[in-house]
Length: 103
Image: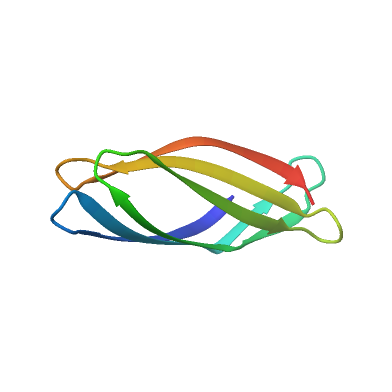
């Protein structure tokens, strides 16, 4: 895949051990070519997440993108991230796993 992922995270701390986060994840001109068929694919999709959490607790973010192909060979990319806000108010984000299925 060639292109850009636009990821916007906004986090605020509430002073009593909690945080409030908004996430916006969007593919921006992501395109790819099938290795076997040479088919062209374009990524689409937006994920929005709003979370009110506590510092030090772990959370999960699920992100789905559709790869639109030239007929009926579309794909769904499913990504899972784990994240938390540490005691310093820093967001710690880790990629967990992904899968791809024909849709």
